[in-house]
Length: 236
Image (cartoon, rainbow, N blue to C red):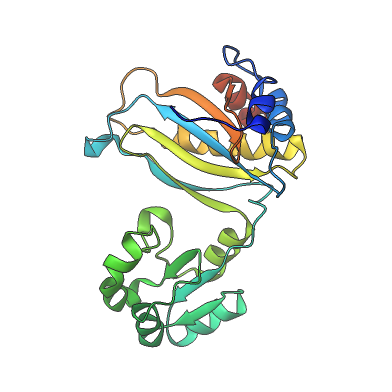
């Protein structure tokens, strides 16, 4: 059985594990229970009523959080010619074609998101084993294969996050930092849950959004009222 430290146990005493918290109260409590010394990430864990073993029940997509993620995102772009220049002007951290492919094959991986133009995927495909296992491979469903590099780079650096259901039917992703105001965290959480709700697959039956739990890094889980979060999104 996992053993928790004194700080975790003290933080856990503040949380009623049987209660569904309204979004604003849950966000404030997540900030209060962030006991680590650094600006901790706030994570959302959403259990879905789907069976991800079936292709028609996979859930994957992206959402731009209205208040960003609170972290600097390093973007690498596979593009050539005018599109490479567009990526540089838009603020990409690394841009290249065959040279960038070889650099990554040699072991360089100092980026968080990879974008690619469709015409560069022929050479990017060689990096499947390297980028795929790290979740960095450009993918059209994630909006990371596009000719509209300016928009894509702006969104990624401005707070776009990708979500994907795991084998257990749960989506795990971040939605801000403990230094954010509670109102900003609620807005980000509402945008995230709304995007996941809109991504409901046609094959899903019964209750789709089952449970939502948020937590600061290493902090205790806080159960959140899902309909109340969706109501915030609809009111925005």
